[in-house]
Image (tube, rainbow, N blue to C red):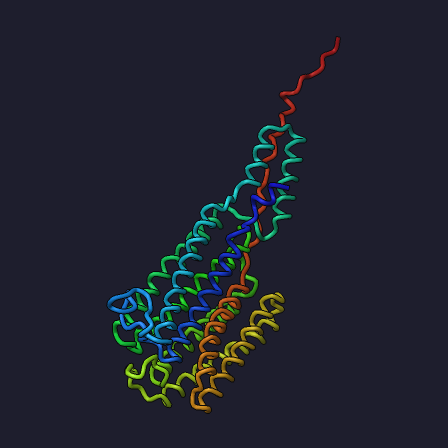
Length: 358
């Protein structure tokens, strides 16, 4: 039925997922730049060299790696623009409009048919239905992702112009986490019907989930500081932040333990309050990702930071953040809203003709 095709967001959702994956991929390629010592493979910005916007043969493999990472920014930009266009041209009200037109033109029995038609259309569209409010939210989120892409590129350029200052490099990584958060929210919002958010867990449990999110953000932030104090600076001449690597690594481990403790507490609490299965699974998934990430972190520390494990740990940070967002998102839902048809006012008995006696 053509109406079903109108109400589905056939392009926006896969584009949003592609944008999310690509932004996580940018973290991986950024890690490759740093771990291969290619941070200054293109020694200036926005050009690659003083004479060329692209890498040259004189730049060698480091120039190729850095330039490839820069080109990924254009892929992210294209995906972000595509998401904005798809969100703008999403047509949210076709099913409802058809129902209203039928209700306006048909008689009372026809109104009932129109109501059933609209309910069936919304039910078949399921969570893919788009409302005017949801359309506005997806446009805002897609624009937020789009605006973050050039901002992220500028921060990346500043890292080069400051010869890989560790604090700027850390800001570059944290900016990626912000973009991932927006991209994840956009992807999730495309699968939601309209309606005000409704909590699936008690308010105190929701507060515990938010506290877990804060702990996850703190782990990532402290991890950035750890990275700035250790090796793998991106270039042999790059300076470090001057902090004691062992001390800051211990602080990072302490915050990780807090995060693990909060996540375990959240899992038990969700089970105790008989939370929905989707919420419990999201919390357990987060715990599993955290444990895997912690294992990689401990192994890399005691094996003196081998390149492959450091790269896996950076990817793991993105996955922990994404799993954290998934956990928080699963604590609420937006119920679908089925448009109602206003019943025709009943005619007053006084208005009915009264039979007379002949």
